[in-house]
Image (cartoon, rainbow, N blue to C red; front, side, top):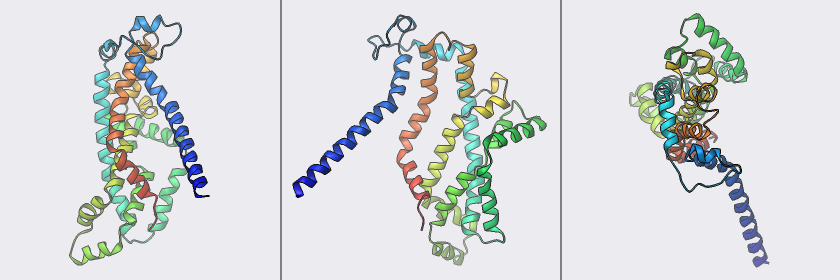
Length: 282
């Protein structure tokens, strides 16, 4: 009976691994195809009547074309500035907010937190319209200020960080107050180190969100000097070489995607820890 159970468990595990392997191939194939196309010569790609799943003569010429035919490096710099400033300002806003809701006691705290959470029910389209009108009235179009301001607050990240802060025992807070520690020092010296996985997760997710921003930058900027990489790809596809030189287009996409892939691979364990911690109670 035990042997049959072991065989069944082994068979189930084998089927599970086969399913996961097939699913991984399906998910990763577009990335493989993107990288493969980016290293094919334009002539070789154009002469392929039947797409080939490999190439014997890879080339980096497409990457040179991607960075010289359009100001892709400028788009990278704009996106880097936008991402770093937005992420830093967002952390400066949401960390004290999450700490206040998790540890401080004040009248109407639960009601205020409920009202803030209810903002998540508002469709993004309505928020975009409101932000667009506000930024336009303030004459902040085609500026980094106009790009950054609507993204410095996130209700979801406040909630995620507040839940992580709430899991730290209250005794630590009371002991710190007995020692004369200020709330800010307790938050900076105790809570943030303990909840570092969640903070790292939020930071990485915000960086990815900023790097992939498309709708808002597309609405608020029409000068190429303020384009982000997502807008740059759209510009390449519409007015650049993207419609005719697909390998160079794929090279630009690979170059833009690579920083996010590296970022995720470096912090993947922290991200998993942060998400798991934010979802636990008690």
